[in-house]
Image 1 (tube, rainbow, N blue to C red):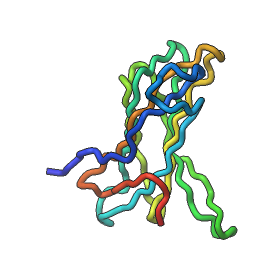
Image 2: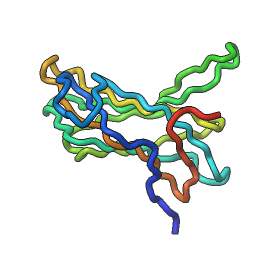
Image 3: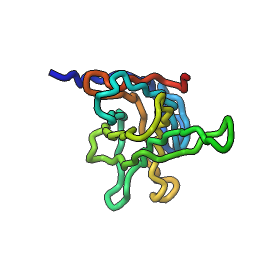
Image 4: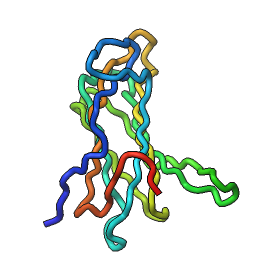
Length: 158
């Protein structure tokens, strides 16, 4: 049986929204938070995909609005410019009330070279008028990979 146990990448309490201080036990980051993650493939014959899953508290979006934007970006070394990288969006999704404070994003790394330097970004829905932004807390980011084909660590590590 293949293991699909989640691997904790980051756990904390980061408050997103436009009303600082609502969550006294969370650091306030404003309208977005972006976490750097290094992914390493442990089995070359394994699948080229992994799942990054974000967990939140108190997400309550208004009907008719798209929800909070989640984006996974890969940083690829630029061969034309040493010490530079090009950003490649691998996947994105929207997080809303119906997601029950959890959203899984499948990340396909086929055709890219390890180690994989990615960022996981959460941005609040700014289609809503200012003053009505949803305030919520990002609590966890986990990696879910069959048999731990991909392992993850917080930060960029060569």
